[in-house]
Length: 327
Ligand SMILES: [Zn+2]
Image (cartoon, rainbow, N blue to C red; front, side):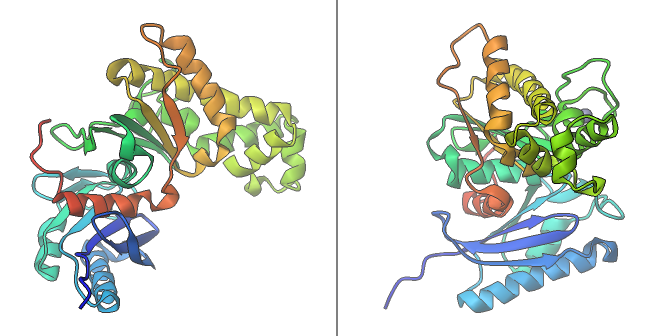
């Protein structure tokens, strides 16, 4: 009789879709399903849909998971497993006892954490971070999130919020940010920020290459088409990405000085710009960090890509939550 490895479940909950995965403790994802969140139906319905997807995968796997880790888009009280504020979900999920509800329904321990922190943990345990001592992740998506993993464990702080490095200020008098401050990295390096900059250029009669690629359809302006234009030789598209990359490097240099990581990982849609954004980022770090050498600092695109969140949930389940916190 073959020994079936113990399986764990990871869930990545987003405003539009959620993904549920079953995998083993080594990070081999065995089964995966994606569903619409239908967030407008409220927390109870969404949590039941998540539980049903776990049931469905358990039927396929022939066994239920030993534990479940769930990444959510917002603020969580990690000790109680209650959501505090999910800004992109209707009703904003104030004080929903997510961990208690799912754990009662499924009969296994359930660990809830912020989605960017989940992605950080996933990348740390099962991605490029496996051999890193200190890893920092920037998720460059609709917003800019992040996380810090030290010796394979997340640095969380009292509210699980340590690692909000997308809200490091890079321009003191800059435009207002959704967090209430101004001039945050997120204002300049998120997907929508890059798209808006591309749109501004085209409207000013610049970035002719980008205009051609989009065929005059302004709705096609995105970080991807901006990158395409830059690679095809549009100097203004290239410069727009370089500016965002330099500000990313400016924010990262503060993180490097504070933590001296050996690895920085970029996730989210904007990370697909790859060397277009990594090169100016690295230049800015080398320019700003003078107290110690940084030539051996690795800056890489996420190995797990858009699955980092599911792997993160899986990792949290495998770790048994996040273990005794030293934070
Ligand atoms: Zn901010």
